[in-house]
Length: 126
Image 1: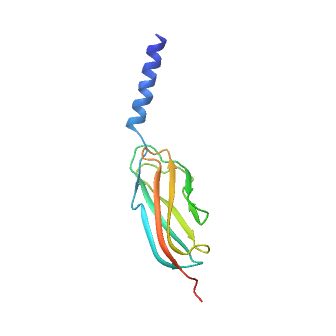
Image 2: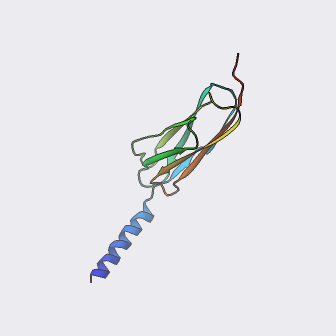
Image 3: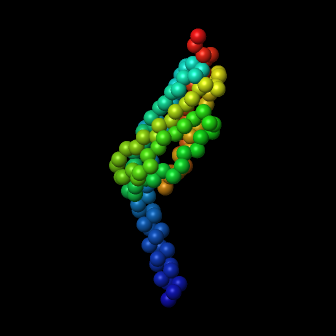
């Protein structure tokens, strides 16, 4: 009897997970800042929509270098609502072609999501 109850409880939880996951759909996953000058600070807003049934909770944003900062919603994003992940690149120590990634971790079914940006950093303006 105990095994049957555990089985039914497990199936109930599994079916709940399948029927109501959170899902993030981004307007774009890549962005090109094109040409910038050394020392410039540039930002891009990666817009996403919760296309799932459950609220999205972003738990972390991992960056590939200290030159990138990320600001993301700390509150849950409800079904059908939009959120913004702001990625900022500080180019003071960069030169030439740059390509960076930001890995967004959340409770969404398609987590983690990798966002990327690129640019060419020219010498500092005189």
